[in-house]
Length: 306
Image (cartoon, rainbow, N blue to C red; front, side):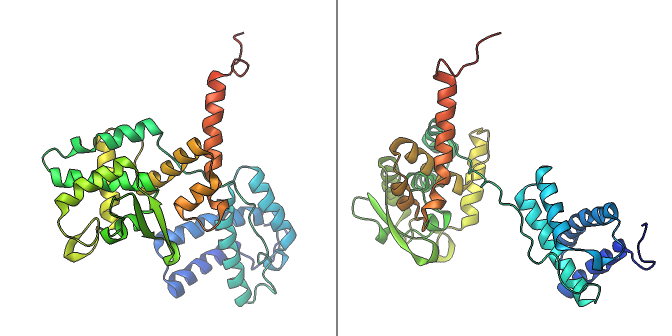
């Protein structure tokens, strides 16, 4: 490297840092490989800039590098991961005496737009739930459980932990409401729709006198892993184009309720969000639906044939 100190070997320093991580922090090969990939970006930039040594590493040029990579399309999430690796490497250089301060300490990645949750449209969701009894015709008990399980998840927008933790004593006599324990131990009462009530009543007659609505082995509740695996299996059996997971049922519930009611506060209460900003992501989904309807229906939205 032109102008560099004779003993300056940035690639060797990065490898020494990775060996330090491997020995002192016992990081997995997968994590070490991720660090190596991220620090290659720094190595290429050091070569591009012709840095004579690590003391020449400064905050403002690094901030310019972050901005450049963001303009080139690197996501805020990827940049945040890269900056975490860079800060860690600079802290190590500081301890080794190769730097007098950490030039990456104050750098932050630009904020990316929040990833929108995937949802299943209302017709596809209805077809899936209505067809649950057909997937296990040889096991009516499991079929009844599955129907009650996923009807309730979609009906009330429950987190999977709330779903498996539900107890019969927390439902009212008509199964129209259910008290659930959410994040941080906060409880809320959620409505239970007619289809879910019917499925729960059928399941209750078959389930016996268990405390949990969905009992598992050894007197506990059904495991989260079992719910995830079962939903994945059923989505494949029904030939759905996307893999289902419990949180997708919650997202779909929120999106469909908001689409029909336009009541953001109501959806916030249903989902148990402490901050309405968390719920506002569903307004973007609702607008996407509106935009598709507009593009398909409005006479001035359609492009005229050339």
